[in-house]
Image (cartoon, rainbow, N blue to C red):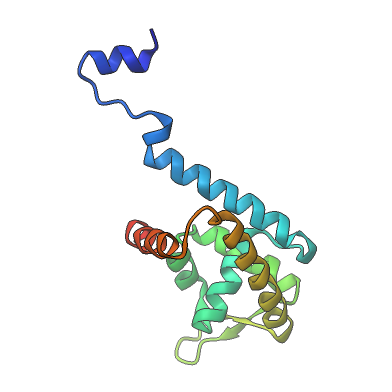
Length: 150
């Protein structure tokens, strides 16, 4: 007798892997991230770099603190990611117009070009990842993920 059956027989509510939301989210997310990392290899980027580029493209200049809050990334990790992207010539740190202590992370011309090509690859990876779902299911999934991720 398995531990799951034994615990369930005693009245415990034990999730199976197939019904554990955390496991399924992690598995689907891991699969998508691995595929995106493979697609981004030619640019020398990883998925976390791509999300910084995406945020900078979407929001314009953001402080590193704002990037960390938006992406749910530790501030020290944001510094390392921005350092990587700055060394690659994809972002720059511009002075904040109202706060001399703050720098805004902004895409460079090269960063805009690389982001555009990387975004095309990311869209292909998303299509492959969500391939089993129809358009309505994709829209529903994205809506649910937005609610859960907040």
